Length: 51
Image (tube, rainbow, N blue to C red):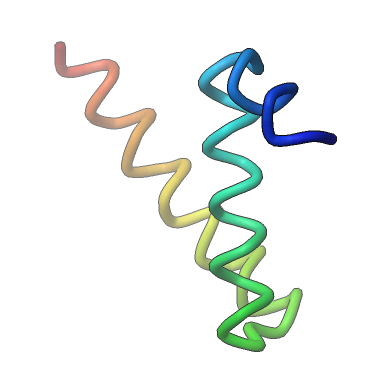
């Protein structure tokens, strides 16, 4: 995807690209990343229900 394509991408795509970059540049193992993402998901779902 070109940078101009990413500029026009939905916010969730931009965030996903940023997260993938962060995980890859820090050599995070996929199993560790998936476990961490589950924790993040649970936290965000909890916060979403409380609002």
